[in-house]
Every structure is written in structure tokens, then in C-alpha cells.
Amino acid sequence: MAGSVLMWLWLGLAVTAAAPVGRSEPFRVMTYNIHHGEGADGQLDLARIAAVIRQEEADVVALQEVDKGVARTQRRDLPAELAALTGMTCLFTNNFAYQGGEYGNAVLARFPVVRWTNTHLRMLRPNEQRGVLQAVLRVADRPLLLLNTHIDYHRDDAERLQNVAEFKELLGRYPDLPVVFCGDFNDGPESRTYAAMAERFEDVWLTAGRGSGLTITSTRPAKRIDYVWISKGAPLRVRRAWVTQTLASDHLPLTVELEWR
Image 1 (cartoon, one colour):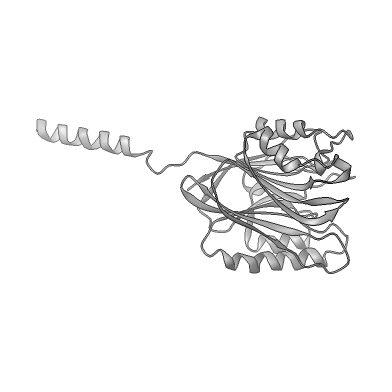
Image 2 (cartoon, rainbow, N blue to C red):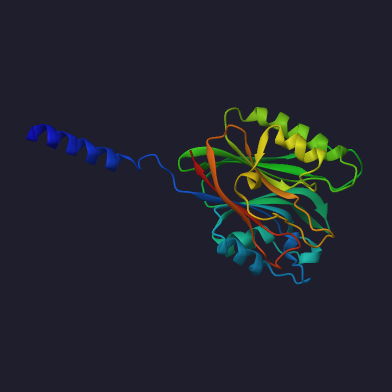
């Protein structure tokens, strides 16, 4: 009898000790259109952008409207500065030649980068070239595909819908990888662009966001056009999502806390 009690006690201790094994820590993903570091007050202050990122303890940040060597931002290398200010690795992609420099999207990451690339998106009219940055990250020893984009803003949504079709086609390059898709989609939840994205992705704000989730307040009315999506069926749990109030850009950053299932 004593032996049986000891055996069950040992098993109980073993189960308790083993429970945390394989359980990953939550991690935070932020999407942020930084308006080349110019705030809603008209001040160019990159340190303020970095302070918001540090404040929200983001582990991965998808940035849009990033300048590198552009005249309006004193030809500064904003991606390199943000990497230094946050202590994170920075990936920058040039989509558009502007004022003698480069302009595009970037990703800041605390996790190892396995590989990354950028794909220019099809334009249906003479316009600013758009792109989608793709980065495979290793998060808690598991691969995760992060996508970051900033698509067309015109009232006619034909180009945005075309881009969403391109996104879905692009996913064929990454079979079986869970996806976190961030960006400024320049369309609200009532739009055809949103409906097309929702066919393949889940809007994390609907799962765990509180409040309106409005991300651009410089327009009248204010809008929710910046999103974090996860691929349907991805082994990810959304713990919470929030929008931070700040004057650091004309957009507000959206942060999502995730964990592996």
C-alpha cells in the first residue's frame, strides 16, 4: 500500500514538473503606420515612435511609410535608427523611389529571421508602387510567417481587391506555415477588401479587441484601417489586442498578444 502511494505521488510530481514543457511564452505583434516619423502634431520625432514600441513591449513590429535617405526626413536612415533605438533587428524593403531616397515597409523583430523577401504588387493605375514584405521568423523554436503591407487608398477598390488576390496566391510559396498578416489596408470592416481578406484570415480585433479599434483619427470620421490578421486554422491563440493613443504618427499602433496553442 505504501509503495502504491509513493508511486502515485511520484507520478503526480512528474506530471506537475512536465506540464510547462512545450508551453511558449506569449509574444506581441504590433502594426504601425509611422508616417515617416512625423506625428499628428507635425513634429518629426523618431525617438517618440521607438518609445511607443518599447512601452508596448512589442516583439515584432510591422512598420509602414518608412523613409530611408529621403529629403523630407533629412536623408536619415530611419530603419537603422529604429533598430538602434529599440534594440531589434530591422528588415527594410524599398517599394518606391521618393525624393532621392527609398520608401517602403519595414519589420522590427526580436526573434531570429530565417529568411525574408519583398514582392511588388500589381498596380492598376499610375501610382505609388506597393509591396508585401514576407519574413519567416522562428518564434519559440517554431516557424511563423509574418506579412506586412500597405495598399492603395483610392476610393475605387479595384487595386486593393487585386492585391488581396495576390496575397492569397503568394501564400502558396509558404505551405503549412502559420501566418500573421499586418498592415494598413486603407479600407474599413464594411468594405469588399475586408470581406476578401476574411475568406482566408481572422481579424484578431474581433476575437480580443476592446472598444472601436480606430487606428486613424486624423480623418473625419475616424477609421479602422490597420489590421493584424492570422491565417484560419493557425495554431495561435489571441490573448488580447489594443490600440495605443499617441501623437507619434497620424495612425495609432495596434498591438496583439499571441501564444502558440
